[in-house]
Length: 245
Image (tube, rainbow, N blue to C red; front, side, top):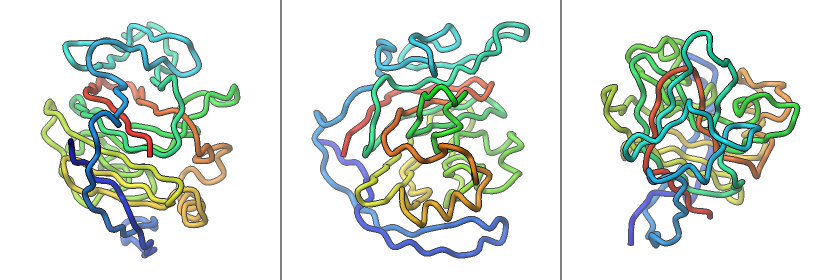
């Protein structure tokens, strides 16, 4: 039996942030026992059967298995410029997602949920809210505001603090999305980074104050695919698993 941290109750408090006028929230979390068999393995280093690229039926050479890791390397200049966001073949609604990530120097990537592959959307970013993956030391996004730093609910909720490991080292992230309880949370390297409302008036108000205000479909798909972002930088993932709530 393994222990993971999931959100169980919440009280959302909206306050003004001095750096950016973004919404924040507080949530009570506790540890609960989870049977290991409850987890569905999405990637363990053996195959990419659970994945495909956005709006295609396969995976290009941009994504490769190296040892126990799934590594994205952007195509060389002059090669195909197609977006290579990776998405799960299955859709999920309420879940706990656990994975390890490692970003390249000055790199940027992210993890989406609620991704739609409707024909009118060109990337996972257009519909899927993103938990940021970033080199906080050298990527300019880290200077653009705390809601763009690693562990943030991108452009909406800032991480509690910077707990990222040095570039080249692995980080462990656990994302919980529970539409029944209207709760979301992110734990990075054992620290609760952000908590946020899900699919309610508080969520709508938060989106309305972000860069996503007015985006058709953004954050609207309660059930959707998990996505790994192609942001044009080398990024690696391993030990990807999901537990449906």
